[in-house]
Length: 179
Image (cartoon, rainbow, N blue to C red):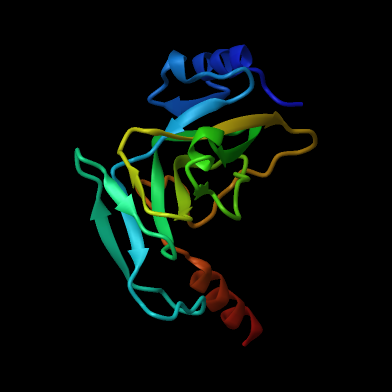
């Protein structure tokens, strides 16, 4: 079952989920709007390799915004820290942003129960698009879970700002287990 807007508000107030900062005007009928933080990352290597860390370049969105370019993957982040030990969060781009040709959260909209932090957003525009820190860029929904809960304890816990891929850590772990 999906939480309604009033239930998201109640859960944020009684601690069943955390949205920091919380703004009542960002509640929708069954989701909460999240805003874009001020930092972007781009990968600076010509070829990305999931078996090793990939270098990144940090960009700061100024007061006049930042123009995203087609063919580039930008890692952004939510301004809000969001998480729950009870509900499964899903994050999607807002339709009004999608209608401007921006793909938000391309492949990983589902969050883990127990994750708390800023969400990294995978941003990819189909044409040049100016974005602004603080703009409403996505919406997060919460689903009730059933069954025993194992809380997230992964590598992105308590994330602040955009996080590059940590896939290489998984590969290193698998190599050590195999040897």
